[in-house]
Image 1 (cartoon, rainbow over the protein chains, first blue to last red):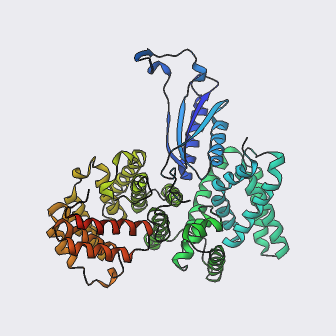
Image 2: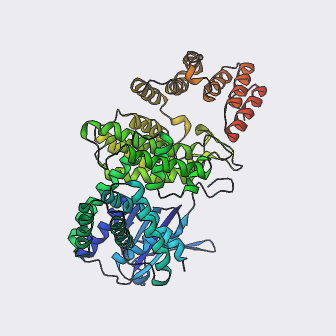
Image 3: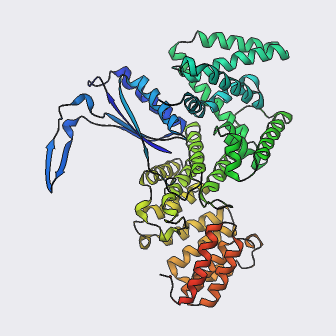
Length: 118
Length: 423
């Protein structure tokens, strides 16, 4: 199974060198476990934009967006044998990354059809 | 709130291999190590539901297992030295500070590598290696392994028991092989992982054409191995093969579960993340000087397909050349057959048919359904429809896979239309 993991940090300031190193080490551990498919940091919203479509009209808003505390700062795509394994990985990541909100969402895969076996 | 049992199982998936590896180093017996690890798991199942999952589950399991190991060694009166070793290690671990844990991580990595080599030891039969690898390194239960290979649970249980006994009887050492044996031993490990992958990618029997979970297990084992042996080009070559093949899994089955051949697949359903990873692994193999290795060559062939946005963009001449190179390295009628198919695509069906006909009496291909299947396709492209139909029917009789048989019989029937490919 594949999961997209996203994370928002309660503390919006950039991580300390120690924390950044610990996060880097954690990514290495995940790579060694064979479960990590992809991971990346997400730049501040000042580099981004929002696009909305309503009743045929587009509205584009450049960042930064005001609610910095709720913005995703990083993602990972992991391959695990169960949702609980993904939760455990998220738990370990957040132990290193600090207080905040993590979310995991299962990605569609070849196994997500009615005709596939175990 | 996630069920604690499932959370414990999740921790087990992440930690059991390293746990068993570390214990094997201590007690020098894989079977005993696994029992101790299982004991620790039982203890976790007893304590964690009420006490909660500990912050460092791996350390908790290892400490618990080591306690049990000491008790066991006391009771069975094994070497005094072993007891002292364990006692010292346990005390040292308890006194450990953070930097030491880093060093321990390296040691754990080495132990994991030793465990990989033991599980895939040549003294074991191929089926035993597969079962033991999935069990000790993949963390699969006996039931899961049995289901994956369509044999009974007792059969797998017995296979694992006998494998452990063989390792003990043969006094197989817990070590990384010497330099002069490393290449051969690595090849053995890669063979086990590839066998697991192929069983998931193109199941040899039963109703399901693919078992994606098995492919995932193999991919995960391969990636772990690449981190343990980053300088071995063929490890990266194998990963490249697996990632590239797995990238096509979603496209391999049609809406009714029917098999879709590579050239008919919807390429929008090819997984670009896996393709990117596969091409990166192939590049790593090539950077390490391993472009000519068998897995790297297979990966290069698969990469030709991955890079083609549409079937007509495929570099068939390059594929034919790579099969030629592969055939020089590992002479095989199957490889020659694949080369013939590529030659047909590059230079026309008549050229391909000449090569396929040369394989007609190959004993190794006698029961191989892809030989008449390939011949049938070439005959159909040359307008020789009666012969093509006969060959498709022959291929259908030879395959053990239900869905492949359906596809072949459809193609046989389609020969009556007089147009090729059938629409």
